[in-house]
Amino acid sequence: MEIRDLYRDVILDHNRSPRNFGRLDPADAEAVGHNPLCGDSLSVTVRFEGDRLSELRFNGQGCAISVASASLMSEAVSGRPLGEVEALYREVHALLTEPAHVPGIPLGKLMALAGVREFPARVKCASLCWHTLHAALTRPAHPSAAPAVSTE
Ligand code: ZN
Image (cartoon, rainbow, N blue to C red):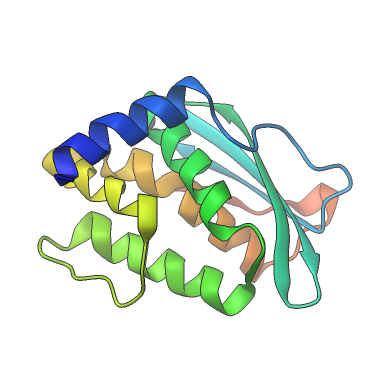
């Protein structure tokens, strides 16, 4: 399937019916992210089981790309060891920013995000959820001190 078709189909599908939308309460870690360029605002809550990310929910408001990307991310990372989640974070960042990036690990439906490269102004919409997840994982949250990230 062409990236362009994959992009259109997957983004439309995940924007229409976002997976894992909501909040985990209690959560083991949490972060909020904002993309002031577009007005996207997301929160990510996660739970761990040993060294795995067992569950992820995201919440907030954003454009179709930011919501679809978060939905795709939630499916891709749930149940994965944290080391693999970190590897996916790096791969998706490269996929979004490097023209001809060849993924070092299978990305499945996340490959659809490569379509965002045709719309440079929207790259930050697609990467917002990943930066927010990264913040949650690198700084375990206490409810009063959820790390906030901005893509600006
Ligand atoms: Zn956006």
